[in-house]
Image 1 (cartoon, rainbow, N blue to C red):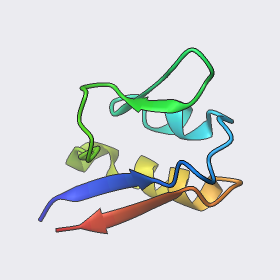
Image 2: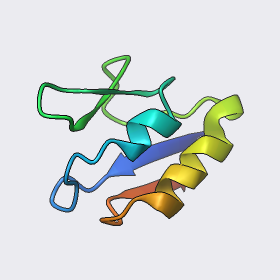
Image 3: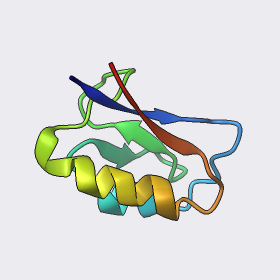
Image 4: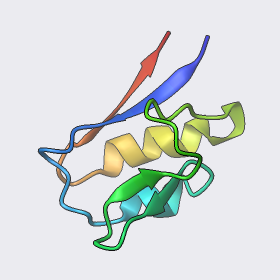
Length: 70
């Protein structure tokens, strides 16, 4: 099973908490919005980082993040 992070760009306000919590996956663009560190559109989360991705989803002040499993 693969876990992926989805970002709702209409909600994101570039606060950066997700970037701090999941630096293995995310980096910031010039305006502070999260970008995939590896250029992936689907943002796969490595197993060791899942708990941090879950925390990022819980802590996002704009509810712009969610995890899906496929």
